[in-house]
Length: 504
Image (cartoon, rainbow, N blue to C red; front, side):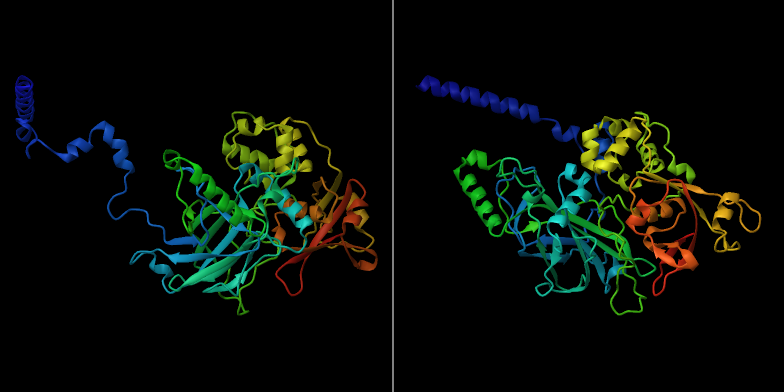
């Protein structure tokens, strides 16, 4: 035993000696004259990381924070996004918190900001078919909204607005310096958007997104400040409580090692920063003659939903845009793909395909496109991608009447056949191709071809006998003769900033 102890002492003393020897000279080699942190950071392995690190005082600091008073699920893995269960129709508080540091954004100090709260689809596949999904929900639930504000319970919100055409968005003004809480109610449940096959279907997740804006120089709330969102699932009343309890019981049965892979459940849900919703917000205008600001137009959208009956008023429409463009190539860039969509009359879907190259678009099958765009537009897009010409259901020729020229009653046909106006200059007609024989399609195509903002068109009339104005209805469009010719003029609408279009 003594021999063993002695051997231990020898080994220990040898190790200490070697360790002391290995430390000798460290202070000399890394002295003040030889050591420089800037030289180390200049090494290639540090250059990339260094360039991405924020400098002191430049750390990103979100100006606002939104907290929803609903517990997160305990059955979410560590690196996944949180998931919160909500009960249908129950009011949930979203606290709007001013998170600015001293001196941040002085331009909004003492002023109101505007926030838009939306409930949207989390699943990318459902985002593509959002318009059809919401229209189907609206058909099954007439008069209901997907999202509402519980105004009596809310605190600090001013001038709340809900657009009747946008059932999944609400907006309001609020003062960041004051306590503000918006109580929301989600009326759609997750299983309403699941194909019913075998019963007990898994519900789809939604997103609650908040976008906040400040005023621009014109007094409109269009300058983006901050956006954040969280993932939710909505259950029938008390279903969220049962689901939360089920998840908690499942986690309690797991081993301690398995529990380490999951997030703890938090009493509240903090919305995480995200990209702003793509659409421009509805503008509040300070100089409105009425005390409460209103929507500039009932057709103006606060939520990005692709609408087959609307078109971009900024698109420069002409006769060429009505003709099918050349076939898109797989090598087409994202920008070229966007131009091809506009040229081929798919402007309603440019946002949906905003990140698609030509190769991405060509990979989509006919079934994919029908699911994304609906039956009519999906088949039309598929045929356009395959260079198959699609014959329109109705073609009409339209010319804008010049202010200096007048066509007397009874002389329209003569003027059309002569294709000249009173000054001898020829009338130039544009071909309007209708895929849907409805009045709204006529208004949309007129706006597209003649560069008229669609939301400014109030009504489309046809001039009848003795100069009377007849409202253009779906039935009238269905009775138009193919390749009919029309002159049209615009008249300012009474009591609004819009216009009426009169076909002659």
